[in-house]
Length: 87
Image (cartoon, rainbow, N blue to C red; front, top):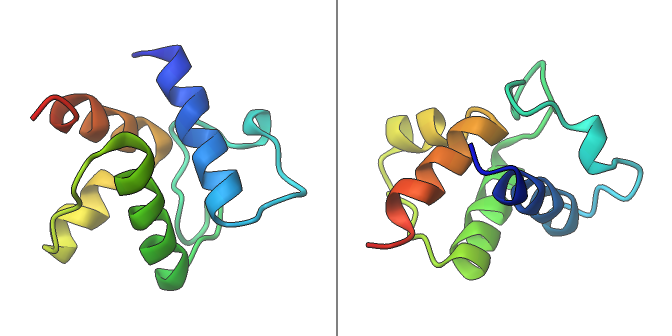
């Protein structure tokens, strides 16, 4: 997995959600972003989806099951960006 893209995604999460007290090292690549993991909520998901679209040029599908799967962790989000960025 692209380490540079992982760092970019972590920084995008921090910047988009104004998580000033968190560093990229604090975000585990495979940990859940929502619920017990980073603790993001549905409002955060909307903001993060918009940030990902703007920064990486990747359109987010409106299918909630698909979004939930792709936004599960930094790792799944990076895979989604890698698979869809060139399209």
